[in-house]
Amino acid sequence: MAVALALAFLVAASVCARTLGGGGRRHGGGSGSAMVAALPEFLTASVLATVVGVQLGWLPALGWYGPQWTILPALALGLPAGALLGRLLDDLLPGAFAEPWALAAAARGIPARRIASQAVRRCLPALLPNAGLFVVGLTGGSVAVEQIFDIPGLGRTALQAAIAQDLPVLQACALALVLLAAVAAVVTRLAARLLIGPALRDGGLSSPHRPAPPARRSPPLLYAVALLGVVALGLPRDPLALDTRARLQPPSWAHPFGTDALGRDVLARVGHGALDTLLLASAISAAALLAGLLLGLVPRLSEPLVDTVNAIPPVLAALLVTAVVGSGGATPALAVTAVAWAPLAAHTAALLRQERATLHVTATRALGAGRWYVLRHELLPAALLPVTRHALLRLPGVALALAALGFLGLGAQPPSPEWGLLLAENQPYAERAPWAVLAPAAVLALLGALAVTAAGLRIRRRKAVGVGQPRSGARELAFR
Image 1 (cartoon, rainbow, N blue to C red):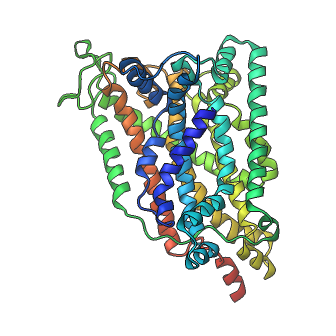
Image 2 (image 1 turned 45 degrees about the horizontal axis):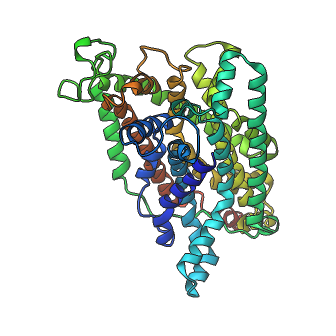
Image 3 (image 1 turned 180 degrees about the vertical axis):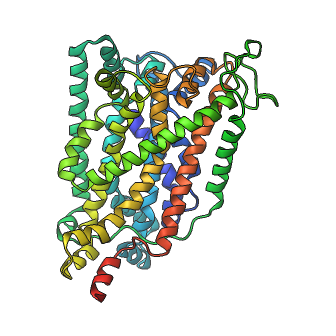
């Protein structure tokens, strides 16, 4: 966990490097980081173990005997986590560079490197709650990675205890995860309060949300056309047709994505699986966004729930749902929905905590605005768009959580073409037929790029016409 978290911070820094070097000016839509964030952890682990560990022999691929054995699993966990953290930080940096202190510092000739470091410090309080969630998630949510690298970790131990119905071991693992979540939450909240300082109490903060120039429409359009093209080409094909004479065939005109171990067309299975995976992931993301926004409005109620829920990996949540309602097609959806709202609630609470301490909210209250007016016209517009963007960034992650459950045998069952099951079925043949694994993984990465570029287009376009800009409520109330 520690090595993966350090690598995640390095990846996040590389994602934000161009924005920091450009004084807050963003130079792209973040498609590359979105694709990295959309890579399945178990797929990355499989590729690293096969290529780096077995074929090249650079690092050990199996076991747990010393520092060298931590590098490959830490890369598998840290790359997607760091890409997501980097995207969240990169979304906050332009607003920090546009605050009065940054403009005054630049006018006085303060070195750009020092201004950039203070801009990162200004953005950290809104990011720390999610960083605390990653700490626990890297520990309890790495079951598939621990399975692949044969690591006797806490998540794998809890999964084995749950399957074997070893209640004392399962209770001990759950208690350890809950305690870790509580400690991480306390540390991150204290750090956020220390970074903000007395401005949080005195209402002296500036709103970090500023109008941004319109984003280019071409990247999300290209990604959407490519994704729809794959689905359209795959739907007319039969995803269940077997041809044992064409097992593990490479891509060709007859099979553009090749065939799997049973001779089934991979393009057909990816296209048909898109309907189930995308619709289910979209519905779960929408439900998580609504729950996260509502619970983030009441942090005293939601913060203990967030700490507890985040301590339960989706795999254990799936086992608990199975024990309560039984196994079935709805089990993975219920399990992922039960834990997907926690990061969004933490993000909402962190944003609102800072927004309540801004000058324009203080002015609005001084002009006689009531609690509901401030909530509707000042607080919600400031939190809705960033949290919606966060939910879109996590849309591929929801699909990955469903895929991970399918990979571990807790999700969709054969012969379903669900993407997670496709990755699980073809993962043992990754060395011999990499196209069977890379095709669904590439479509997942394409989904991540589409989500982040579409989210940026929507936020910037709405802000450009004045929706959700700071001090609008105070001006409207003053005119009244």
